Length: 333
Image 1 (cartoon, helix red, strand yellow):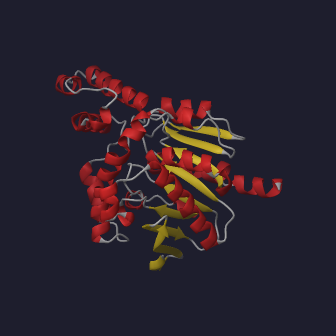
Image 2: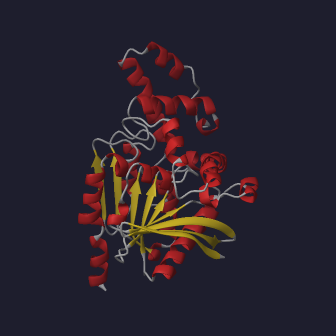
Image 3: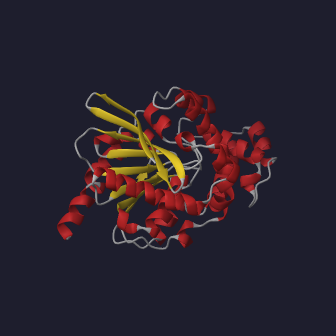
C-alpha cells in the first residue's frame, strides 16, 4: 500500500506527503527536498508519540539545506494514527521494525544505499535500538536529547527544579514540588508530570530554555498546513497513546546497557541545560558506547532542542563533521 497524497513545489523545494504500508499499518511520511540529490535523513520524533514536523517547521528548522529530510509520524500518532492501533497500543519491537522498514522504503524510492538517522528524545531511544539491529542501513547515528537512564534523568530534573525554586526563594514553588511524590513509578503519576513540566519550562530546562507552553505547541500544530485537521488532533491523541504504551518502557530502560556498541559513526548533540533528558545521562551514554568513531557536542545555550535553539551551530556541525561521513565511507571502499 503506497499512495502519494500531495506534492508541493515552492521556492525550488519539493514537499512530498505520502502514506505507506509499513508492517501492516498505514503510516504517513513527509519528505522535504531541494531537488539536489542530497543524502537522506530520517528524523525520529520524541514524545513518545508526538510528531516533530509541525513544531520544527513552526520554528524554521531547515535541515533540507543539507539533506533530503524524511519526517515520519511513528505508528499511532499524527499521520499514522488509527483507531485499531489506539485499541491495541504500541510496542517497542513494532517501532524498531517500522523504523527499519521506513528506511528501506526511502532507500528504494530514492535509490540510496544508506540514510542518516537522527533520533530526538524518545526518538534517540528508538533510533539507538534500530541502528543496533540494522547498522548496515545507516551512514551514522545522530542523538539529540539523548536518553541514557530516564529514571536517573528524572531524579536530576526533580533535584534541579527543587534547588532552583529554593535558590529563588520561591516558597510556593518549593511547596508544590515537595508535595508531589517522585519514585520509580513517576511515569504513572500525572501530578508529578505536570509539576516537573511546569517548572523545567519555567526554569529554562524544558523543551526550550525560553520555555514552550502548551498553548504555543497547540498553535504550532494547528497551523501546520501540511496536516489535515484530523491529523492535527491525532498528534495529541498519539502523545497520550504513546505515553500509555511506552512510558513504562522508557522509564525502566538504560540505553548505556541496552546499546553497548554501534558499528557506525555516532554523534551526540546535547543541550547543556536539558532537564528532559539530562546532559549527564547523554554524556554517560556517549562515554559508554563503543563505536568506530564518536563525538559529542555541547550546546551551551540550549535545553532539549538545540536544532531549534542554536540552529547556526547545529548546521555547522552537520556540514563540517556529519556529512563528510558519506565521502569517507565511499573512499574507504
